[in-house]
Length: 188
Ligand code: FES
Image 1 (cartoon, rainbow, N blue to C red):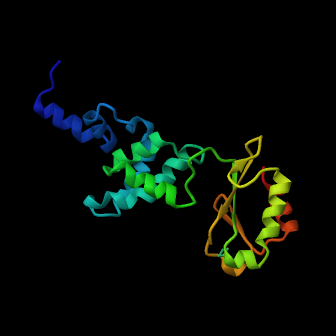
Image 2 (cartoon, protein in one colour):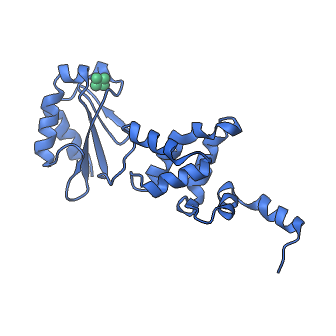
Image 3 (cartoon, rainbow, N blue to C red):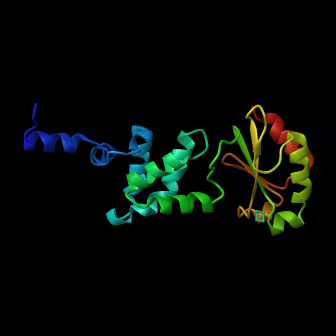
């Protein structure tokens, strides 16, 4: 059956941006982005001028990372670039620059410990040693059961509560080794 131009227009109007782009690119990776993910990215795209879709790179990376168990793959970054219609390198640059993006699997609880100047002066070395020996892993590693991963990060803008760490979206400040134990024990 051949579509009339009116039918084609109607079909095009009912397609999501991802679907219509998919029709154009034979090697498209847009299938990797679910409808929900695309809808969430669209909410961010709507906040910027149409020719500034690159501005949605950071939220798009976060949304896709969250939907993929906490980490990004090259294919997913390519799909984001395709969806935003920007060069893939622009997406790689953002994903490899900021510490909140992960390029390999992470634990269910991603522990980010700040070791920058304020935290270092207030005892982050002791917190890091304690975490490493308690979990049996180093920075950039994940426990065997996939529960925790450990990451060293730069200042997370909570210097007044140094030493501090971030787990998921929560900040934990004024840490002591005892407080770290309490926090980890509460995590399922
Ligand atoms: S130096 Fe650690 S939060 Fe700023």
